[in-house]
Length: 173
Image 1 (cartoon, helix red, strand yellow):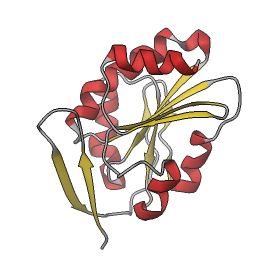
Image 2 (cartoon, helix red, strand yellow; image 1 turned 90 degrees about the vertical axis):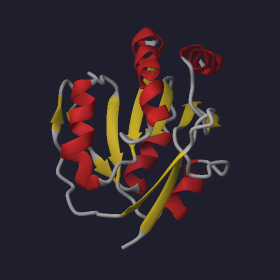
Image 3 (tube, rainbow, N blue to C red; image 1 turned 135 degrees about the vertical axis):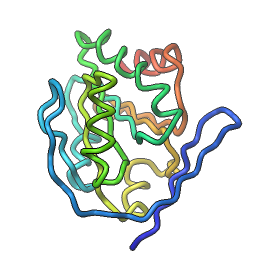
């Protein structure tokens, strides 16, 4: 078993660190409202979401159902997705929950909160390999967000208010 420790960083004094045993067994895709199957991918499957080179702006947010700052900021990402759809802004939520929690935690969370953006679940136990591929600046703490369009790319290891997120997204449009 591989022990994974991911800090759920935020800008408040309440930091939460979670340590859990990696359980990688259930890769069943489940249908969520309006989204179809939630893909479960390793880093190779995630990479295309981080490297699209077209006229869209991508906002890729790394989160987990147990991360309070992640949950708090999700409505802001959803609002950006809705308000900037005509400007071709696409939000992708990358869940770092354990794969065996897809049916019991991730899907119920998505349904309860009516998440309309694309959701994928990252199932890759080699975090030491893929975290620096996402960003050399990333310690592994969440929430973390990549905003990019073409070759312009910004990385944030922090949570956002709606105004802060809107400012960052519009700066790259």
